[in-house]
Amino acid sequence: MFQASLLDDTDERGPRPLSDARRTRLSGGAWVDVLPGWIPGADALFERLLETVPWRAERRHMYDRVVDVPRLLAFYDEGEPLPDPVLDEAKSALDDHYASELKEPFRTAGLCLYRDGRDSVAWHGDRIGRGASEDTMVAILSVGTPRSLLLRPRGGGATVRHELGHGDLIVMGGSCQRTWEHAIPKSARVTGPRISVQFRPRGVR
Image (cartoon, rainbow, N blue to C red; front, side, top):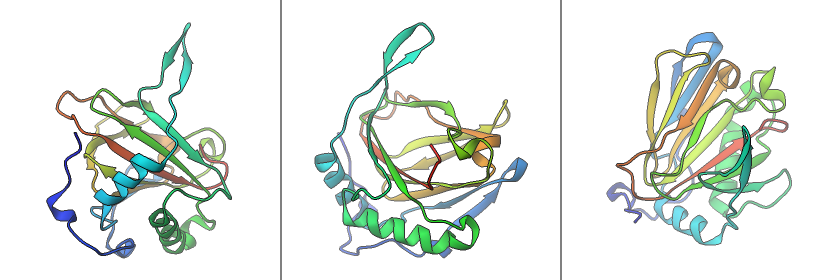
């Protein structure tokens, strides 16, 4: 069962200033910006997304068999209306703040619903398309029960952990998708659901 944050009891709307984000430089030209509590009212946003997004289950080939993807998914392509006005405000704020570095707007939004600690995503980088050869950015807004997002250098190395939920933001930039990997591991301690919203530029998956 989802448990609301005691810090999220607010009528304030709209994202907080991205100038408050803390940047951490990683190896190989990668970096991450992290801003806890970026979206006020994030628990209410979580409830709206849970109810209104047309979540779907997927199955994928893995080795010699077809398996269930351990999370529910939704995708909003370029030009499609996002499912909540707060996400439009979030995308606009990201576009404005990162314009000088990214030099293009964020175009798509992929949503994942992690129903409980059994749902997960394996180690990967967003290297389908331009992310395989170009520096880019992926901005992830997390609402709902916090989950661990892990980062490690591609090929192995020390792991960096961020606990993300209740409106927290992480932006992975520079070479992060090429030279680092990220994952949401399974957890026996987590029982509540989490939704992540991944904003990406055109041609990055």
